[in-house]
Image (tube, rainbow, N blue to C red):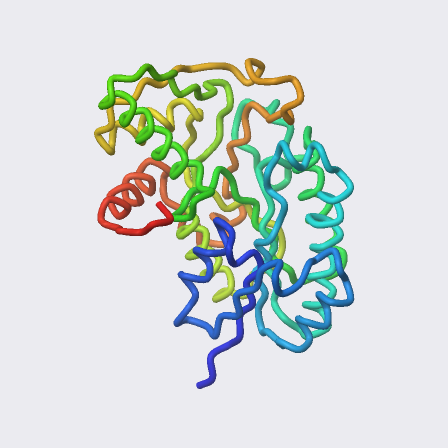
Length: 300
């Protein structure tokens, strides 16, 4: 039996790299990045996809630096919104199943209980607005697309929030050993969400494809914590004695993009479909950190 061809955009990114790792061997994976095509170039993008002729496209490519997006709305919308529509149009042309990865930042964070798929989005920054526009354009272009809202991703890539936490902790320990002064690592305590392992998103994606689902789904781990609590947990599990200081979102520079305070998502539709594979964030995080200890990888 010939393996289905799966194209993964953003293959060098945090989510994309782990999608490639997870699905290689299960599918004939076609990893692509901006070196292959720029999604803002509609003709080049559609031509490349038509020539590759994939059966499935996982669209993980995006401009995801929230502060940089705030400073360049035009490019952000062209990439995350219009570019995603282009991917959807190309998917329609080659009759490929499309999975588009969106974000918890489509919500304004004013709710005091987990957001479900039927809640009305109201993004407060350009990144969130661009991803919501991408959702709408993808859904309009392709009726059987899957839209997955993910959040607070961590994985083995250098851009992982957890990886950056570990590196910052290591630098602090180096200064301690050298007898140098060091500042506390500041983490916000008033931003609440759910850390989600990229590998679990990949596994959930595989199950969705297996069941041939379509539509919008939330896809995050269970439970919730603040960025500050997450840092404390990581350092405790790794037995790193790090000085961490709690702060508030408003303590940062005023030109920083606004962040919603509470963006916990409930995987209501996955649960209704009987295929919610996502574990509680604490269980998944502990598994990730234990595995990470045994990995010798320069990316970490």
